[in-house]
Length: 267
Image (tube, rainbow, N blue to C red; front, side, top):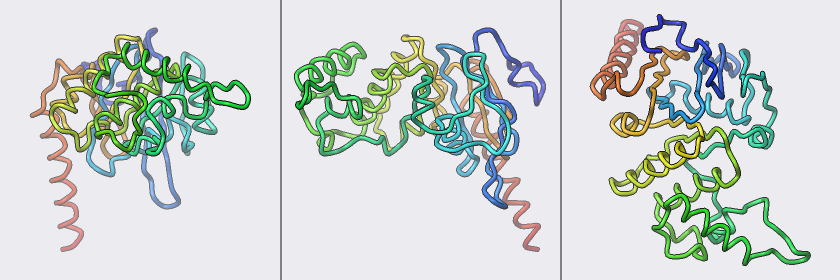
């Protein structure tokens, strides 16, 4: 991968679970993505980095069915797909965890784990079954920081909430997991816990795309790193072949270039 010339980052392999080919996204006169191509292998963790406004979150929204691309195509398990909704993408195995997590603060952990798919013995919810299965699933993923699955989500720390949101996606049988800034505002211990959960997800054979700004954490947990600049993927390296310094310098160079262009335009 790393020796391929620019524009040939995404040559398909037999192990690809997801491919994005020449995706663009325009909002009227504004172009968020110009020509994005990337690939994700089965059981791979791909770090997606780039400056604020680079289009990372837009790409994630397209991949999870929340938005549709202006052009380009998405290939999942070798078949071209067109997502019309988040529900459809989820039914095909792609799930997303945003920074706001979509958890219900007033519900318990186990109710959140079963949100919108609660088992019912009419007319009652099967709370005992949900409680038992939620606890077993969290234990199997090594998430042991909770006092009980009976506590309300509102009482949890940011790291614990993130852990529950990721665990819920795994519990829903996701094959591709999209994590939008899962380490934002995390302390050292909580950040380490989330990285351990990502490793556990990978061990289960689930593929992950993770957006993060902390390049040290990206390199610690990711197999490959893609840099999104100017609406395109401009850099694709195995994590072992790059460094925090190299990634930082590329983003800083982009910032300097934009600053120079702004000064020229103003003069």
